[in-house]
Length: 487
Image 1 (cartoon, one colour):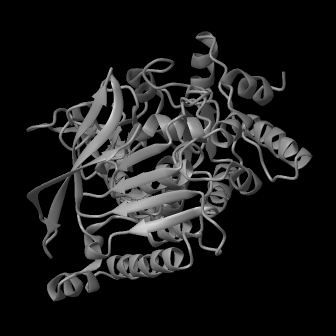
Image 2 (tube, helix red, strand yellow):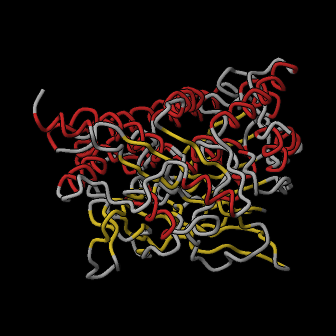
Image 3 (cartoon, one colour):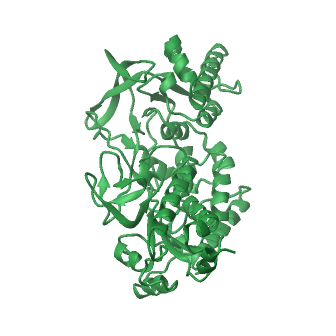
């Protein structure tokens, strides 16, 4: 054993605070522990770390539990992997503790060597169109909160419109459109939706849906998995405009250079063939059964105005566009009005800000350079011991899996920064592991730990078993707290 390793054994573990227990926060915690074990000797750092994860909600997992449609089959596997990571003696969960309210940045820096922000997004980017303030216009974020049972979200949703529009060319738009076309019984059989969501979707009056995507088939941002889930909606006929699929050779060539884009385009052409078959067979769904709902997919269609009467949505005006092989969109001046009674926009999320941290409104991120928090957006200097990852670092782009590579990059930057300090990265004035517990107790705050989460999870699974389902989600925060604390 080298002299460096011997000296490392006498160093106390690093203490890291992570804000947010979604995929970005949990992946970063796991990777930090693994990279530290791998690189501690090389960098002259302690071989171990204690990581405390702070989550404002009563339960963990953020985006996986509350930001993704419940009928994604891969979600339960991701949630299981995150839970396995949290079941680690070096990772401590502090749910129901809100940064900036229950604990301040100064209080964390007093007790931790570094603070990593892995916060997500709960707000929509604004829809800057005339008529966006009409009754019947909804942002995707609030609708997602409703159908995912977000603790502070709506418990009812006005699904009274028979004809609806969804604006957006990404996976969230696809999720929203799919849930609006879903059969409640089919959804309940396969997912953990709570009772209030089942009742709402059961009463949904939507019969016609228009999905408007500004750019062309080759420029959409859908994942192949999203497209395959759209294909298999019971009772739903897919309808497309064949002109949208008339791609020139240059566009096809450019799309073919990227594997994911090529796969997406190929799947969209499969959907075109499905839509033709559905029409030829007498307006049926994917199984050949009579369809009672119609789902129109419009590419090269840019909404320009939402029309209304008496303060309520009556139609949406859409301009036909053209998209070049380079992805640049051009207006044509050709407009068409579609009668609709509700409009949902899924044009992007705005990641949350953090008290005491500069926010980049243009990029919608915490002000940072390579994940290192800055004092200001323009010309700011690096603030020691403060970092960001996931959407807090790069904005609301990328799939859940993207957070892993992001986390590895940030973690290595953190470790190298620690190695550059004379203190081996041990920078917290108060290194007592129980200090944070005393502070929260003094404030009357009762955090929910991993064992508390397991009690909530056990209850949800037991409720699901009673109904022949794997899991039924608890939505009320007070019930979560009572279950978690064994009350």
